[in-house]
Image (cartoon, rainbow, N blue to C red; front, side, top):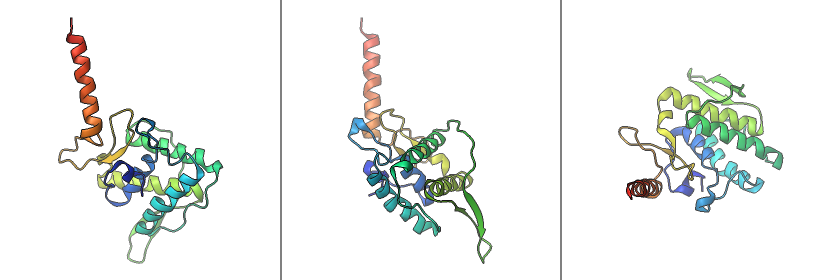
Length: 187
């Protein structure tokens, strides 16, 4: 089970699902959803499922070694940085461990280097770069409901969705707005 599937969402197309799934590891206490980077066991399970699936599909070498509790703060920082990028908030520039490879057919690919969380950072930011270049980046969004920091792929024709699910988060927001209007309209 991926972090994204916990929210009954479809993954973004192509390798951008690694980015989406990293953001969706965040816990949502209001909905009883735990943080998948909260314990070494949960984080290792996420790496074993989502990261290795991406790695196999992308035909990328290297990987994340066995995680320890010392890796968890760096994993959470990476998630926070990526979430800020999805929200289009300013981040702090930093170097990333990656290289460009060219195959026998002349195709260039970005390959993460380093080990552990550094390798994962190279993989994630490489997918962000690819998505920004092919235009799919603008379709990855975070739900506007402040209690639901879930990343979703906006497949709408005009790219206008703001809720991961209009029936849950959208209805909650509409109900709150309606109640607020009634309170201000009451004598």
